[in-house]
Image 1 (spheres, rainbow, N blue to C red):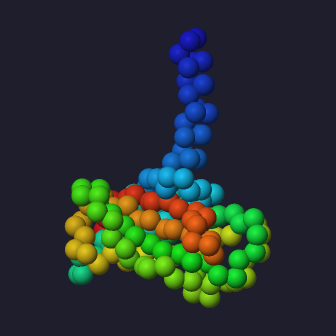
Image 2: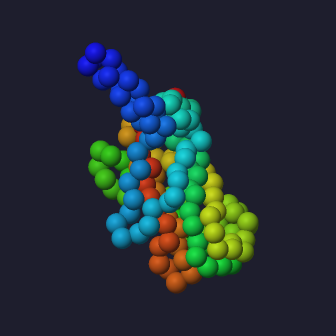
Length: 157
């Protein structure tokens, strides 16, 4: 009887865990709000991340989606991206601070929830199966960070 009760209790826990499973890791930046939600187009739910590593150029490419909330209107939205390899931890800037308005998102941004999709390409000889962290930083107009997080994944074919 106890085995059946244990099995019945295990089923909701398994269902709950699979709803929250993601094939990548998220690390929020210190002292900065993290996004409300993150997704990576190349990392579908319940699957291994794929089509990230490009064998012909030894580069990696991902499309990072941030869902974030704003408490006031913004006419400019400075963003920047960088990455680091798990093996050495050296941060390399990919996209210097640039205005996302018109390029990645339609502005002006009203208060509320928004989603931005940013394509990130790493051209520095990425090895297949290498573990990478890609950072997306969304800054306010006064150069303070509004939202910041790093997404970690394996560069798979």
